[in-house]
Each structure stands twice: as C-alpha cells, then as structure tokens.
Length: 82
Image (cartoon, rainbow, N blue to C red; front, side, top):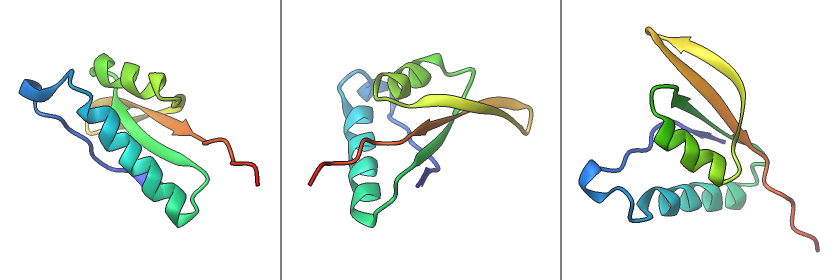
C-alpha cells in the first residue's frame, strides 16, 4: 500500500499530527488487507525520515526523481495472531 503524500503545516508540527495521519494510513491498509506499506521521503527531509523510522519504516532503496534523491521506505506490519 503506497502513501503518495503527507504534509503537516510547519505551524502544527511537533503535535503528533504526522503520527496520527500515518496511523490512519496504516489502519486503512490493514482494513484493505495489504501486507506491505511503502512511501518515499526526500533525503533533504531528515525530520520526516526520523518519524518514519521511529514508526517502523526502513529504507530499502533510493530513487532519483526530478533532481531529488528519495529513500523508499517500507514497513511490513506484524500479523496478528488468531
């Protein structure tokens, strides 16, 4: 399941909004039955990269798009036991 865009206005950063938005994204992916989550983060945005890493995403490749280098980050949530 791919997250295309996520942004929190600078005046609202640091209030947990990014974490809540990612939680909603992950919940939707789970409801739809997706087993792998993907997103891109600009390497010039270390704050966002730290957030994604803290939430369990890890880089698995890099991409050069329109002169910007992005890390592709992946998360494979643990399956729940029945």
